[in-house]
Image (cartoon, rainbow, N blue to C red; front, side, top):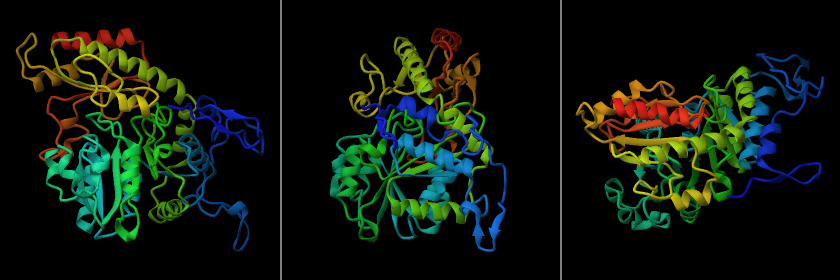
Amino acid sequence: MPDGRAGDTAGRGPDAFATRVVHAGAEPDQLTGAVSPPIYQTSTYAQDGVGRPRGGYEYARTQNPTRERLERAVANLEGAAFGIAFASGSAATATLAELAAPGETLLVGDDVYGGTYRFFERVARPRGVLATYLDLAAGDAVNLAGDGAARLGSGLAGRIDGALDERTRLVWFETPSNPLLKVTDIASVARAAHAHVGARGAAPIVVVDNTFASPALQRPLALGADVVFHSATKYLAGHSDTVAGVVVTSREDLADQLRFLQNAMGAVPGPQDCFLVLRGLRTLALRAERHSANALAVARFLAGRDDVAWLRYPGLVDGPFAHPQAGLAASQMAAGGGMVSFVPAAGGRHGRSARDRAVAICEATRLFTLAESLGGVESLVELPAVMTHASVATSPLEVPEALIRLSVGIEDEADLVADLRAALDEA
């Protein structure tokens, strides 16, 4: 994958991602030269006259200089022209869903964050925007058109009579996905979607949730996506101390619609939250490298255990638990990322069921904190079936009850492996 170099406006030559991530949105304050720009903690702005706002600033829901820095920074890092920030990743999800009108449909990857599924099924569906779910990571994505859904091998997909139709407004997926870490061929899905005539006589809009990878590892716009979004709470901020979301695109028509919705719906992040994400961004390249190295070490350790029944990590390329899309992951990601999912085998020293062992492991770790969320510098462990993905229980997207999801932090890798070894041995 390319290093994300981009020329700067002064013509000094290309800057690599690791350079841009330090400086994007963090330019010294124009007024004082402060290297750490001020936080504009204000709700409104003095105007130079009636109808003459100074610099265009009227009200902080609509414009805030700190928020604009964050939007500009994430757009820069994703290779986009426009950025729009929100109060959370879920607020970004809700706003993006407003791009579809009643009677139009969404084609959604069949492994998504539980809150995304909850919104589509309990908020969007009652207002007439229907989602269908498809295993986009199975088989060739060009089979999305026409009767291809039946050939993708998913029981759910087999029941969809043509995955894309004349009502399809959005094609939406996560890669890697949450929590099964499926990897979807972004370029193939984008080509298939853009070749189709969907709602409003236009090609469906391809939306990629890049939260698990971050722009440090993957840039979907360069692979054909129309919109990329993040729960900036996770890897972008990186310190488990704020909640925010960011959407980026290079399509001006979509940016205009999203900016209008951002202001009209009002789910904007406060300036302090924007500042915290901006501060986190400056170490993103370094953190992503360490997260990925540690996660690979953890995955290799787990792959060597005889009491692990199932394991997924996008960077695991060999052995009995090699990721089924490892080659694809290597082609569109710079590294495997910091997320690992696994299912322990039944048995152990106490003869427990797989689920009971999973609970025991989650409750026994010392360094891996039992908590929801991910992407912080500290390592986290959770049981998705009853935590982040409880909302998909009994649905076709239900996750295995014994599945453990790890967010591998930046601690010493030997300490993390030792922590998991002790928990597995005791369970």
